[in-house]
Amino acid sequence: MTNTGTGELGRFSIPATQGPVKGKYKIEVRQEATRWTSNSRDPFMIEMMAKSRSNTLTEADRKNWGAFLRKRNLNPSIDNSKLYAKQRPGDVKDYIIDIVGSDILIEVFSK
Image (cartoon, rainbow, N blue to C red; front, side, top):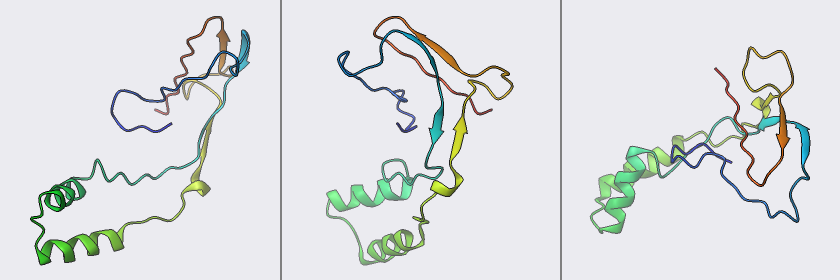
């Protein structure tokens, strides 16, 4: 699940035959990657891709694009993973949900 800002945060579907049975569950949410490079959100990348589609890229654009791509930090960020066992930082009790129907909503707040 990724936070893309599209309003569809963490939305996914699990068939009832493969999903959890009704009952109470302790939730742990793990943030396995703490850095994400999105080509669809970066203003420079949006401009360059638009120019590429319209065949209006100049030689200067190509050089700037190459320099931009080479300086991106693509090192794995798994070493900085985080575990959220509480729904909110100040909560004392573990995060427990009660599955009773087919819809499951899991929200975790880091601030």
